[in-house]
Length: 135
Image 1 (spheres, helix red, strand yellow):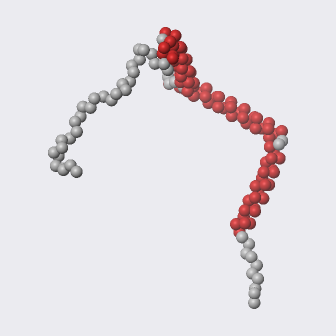
Image 2 (cartoon, helix red, strand yellow):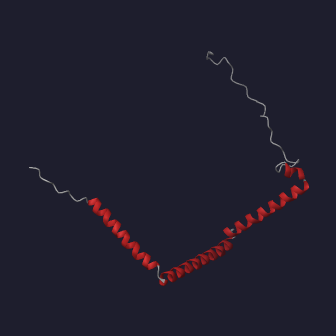
Image 3 (spheres, helix red, strand yellow):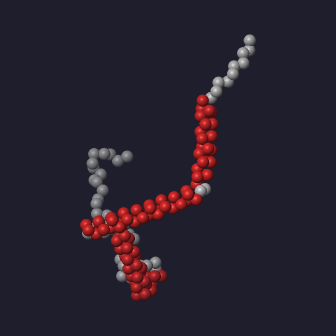
């Protein structure tokens, strides 16, 4: 009486197979679409429109910030560039005035050197007679 049971179909295996087939079909379809000149032209137009819109938005925001007398991102970045150039020029001037500063890693003779020793201790430890016995 050995009855051979037919294996039950696995719903997850069928689902995985359907997903794999669907993915292959979609990949084939989109690869065919993206290979056309129409697709590349439409993507080019889209990118041009996006960049144009982004530039227009940036110009509008810059005008709005200027009307509110608030610095825009471009203003802050240009200020940072100018400050970096000034610092670079200052470092070159300092190096010319004090050649030992360049050799010593940028420390000139006029700069304050941080102390190497710790400051004197001003607090005293609590008294020994605080009720506890030393062990």
